[in-house]
Image 1 (spheres, rainbow, N blue to C red):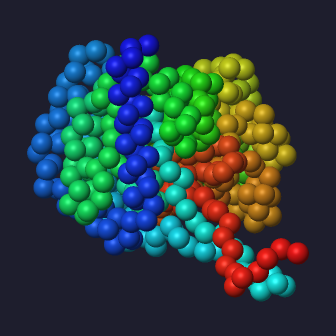
Image 2: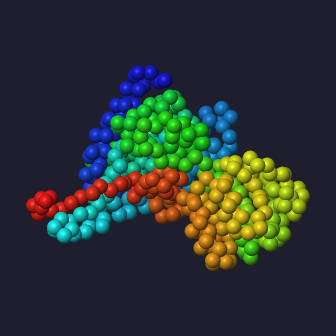
Image 3: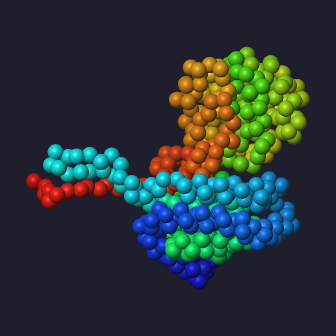
Length: 421
């Protein structure tokens, strides 16, 4: 464990976050939007200092042999900065959900009954080497009236410290409590367990990272957890699908950013489409540096492809590897996805409207797409400004979690002296 001092420090942080959350719950939409806009401006104004902190993290991580894919996730580039700025401004401009009353109805006794949207309270956010997640998670929590306690990965510690200072100063400039955004001051892994055990202080825990981290948090947490364990994502290429379109979707889904949870991991192709589609896919994936693994029927058409074993159908590679399987029908594709999918992201490429609608209805995943890349399972791409994570459970959120997913509702009743008989 991290010792009594460490435990007390993290518990005290959570207590300060609770006090900040009480103030945020009644903060004006204008003040919250102002804080977000100030943070967006500071990302540009303080960029040199942020870039220097990130460069130090990158050099240290590279010296430890961190993989190229993880270094890519750690790197803050001008494009990442611009995306963060756009996301902050988009969240700032969104309607504020806090205090919104839904479904107000009039009872026979004159009582008006409805539900008011309210913040969740204090959110614990545990994540790995993605410093941009520091900004995205904090922005969404703030907009929804929540305080957030962040525990980032050790590789991004310097970057996260610089970003949290920027966010805290932006909060103070808007008249809001700086303690609404706090970073756990240690990268000791035992701090994760400390957060998991603060059931009386944290209202929700959101882990975002590898399968081992997710399973640890789900096993140890003393409060609700929203998470996804893996992204075993499929593209089904239907009989009669446009081959050019299907190849483009597959390459984008696999090769654009293979280390992300919304990357494509498997392609299922109808037997009638396979003779034309698979050779075209093989050529395109070779250009992108992707290793293919296939079932026996795939290897009859593509003799140079490695054989796929049973373990390949459930693997989340997070790398330039793609498994291919030939199926005889939409029904077989649906059955395969139901058996091996992780309820994260599933896509179909088809020109058959009935097949598209059936795929949308029957596939159980947080995002189901027709004729589009699985890489769109992202809060910014879906119009939420950013995301704090993707939930593959159905209570209380399913899919990308934005501002509204970080609120809940309480019942409210408006009366004029009514008493129960």
